Image (cartoon, rainbow, N blue to C red; front, top):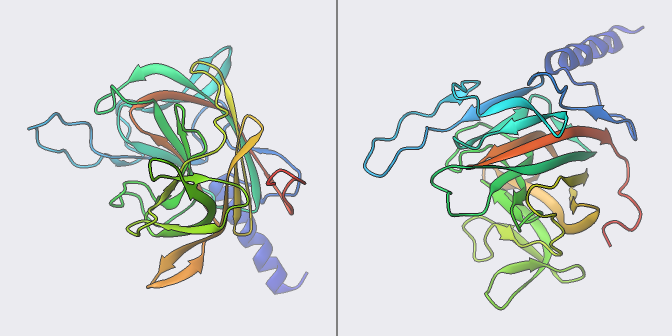
Length: 280
């Protein structure tokens, strides 16, 4: 074996050992949640909630979770990742992913926390996550597959990301995904903004398990909820040193945003093409 190949082999071995993650293979599923603990993930939490007039405390930061916002619980007879929602933040993979099909199941719990007691239960799946935690938007720069009661599949951009989405404005002036429409560029702090509403709404009633599929190939990403596509992103990119650059890989983050939620069967496979007809 040539020295260069030997060095590459051991480098890949070291990376997979540190992250606990093997390189993705086309059509071969790998689990991202071992159903025992949070191996392969790290947590980041913002400041605990402070009532109006109270001083804001420092962010709890990385892997500092005194109230066990993130834990493993048995739900419906099977282990699940429990996110209490009590403190805003997220749990993210240590490994980066590119060209993949991610599948997981989620269902809402009962608990809600201020300041979102009177709002829909909220979480979110952030992908192609890069950079640091604790940004002005809290989470790492990323693209969001919204997971919120009644809004599963919506798109939100976190920090300096851009993407093209076929969308039109509805009667309320909000952009809505519409296959076949002219692509629109979405970016924060621009007239078009950073969010697009999904179509159709295919979420099951609260308390039932939903299946989320996320397909990312090159610079195209498909949001699928319970077997139906309701958002397609193309030309995923971000701003680096004032210039647009492709953003096609990164970590996965799952948000804690004021509501109890459970995730299970979190698995990923490599892909070399999108499923025939799924994005049409």
